[in-house]
Image (cartoon, rainbow, N blue to C red; front, side):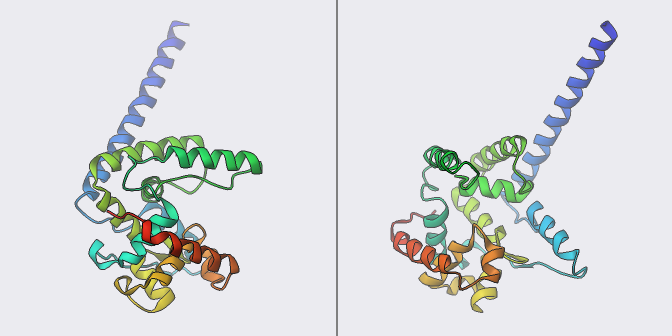
Length: 231
């Protein structure tokens, strides 16, 4: 019994040590990316591997642009569509989470997430799209790291440059060129609202650009944009 107890203690300490090392590794990257731009993300790597199963030489469409080279219309559209309280909260929109839980309970299945821009960024940088309690817990820890160490403008700049916007399309610059043939700085209000409406299902809308639901979402986002507060 003593030997079993000793091995159990060693096992628990090993697990705790590995968890601590993992958190420190994540923290190191968060600190690095507060000054340097991430060249890729874990989510991009997952999507690239999927694309290369059919086309081995495939490459992602992505091009980093600085915050001031992204249209203010797109910034307002994303805030209006994804996280209206972004500049006010500290990483979590508790009211939004509560509304999402109630909606999911009413529908009897997962239909809404309530994730903030900061939470979405944490997932895209380091985690997989698979849903689990461990992933949500890790997402929360990374969100706290990002919110503590980065400014809101930096969070938003990285988010706009790494989110998925189509089949192999990542970031505002690539999205603007893919859908409209212009740079992210030239996006007008309606184009920006349309791109913001695509964010929850970018690969679907890439193949269904005239979907009636997208036109409706675009109109709603356009109406909300004037009230959107951006960092």
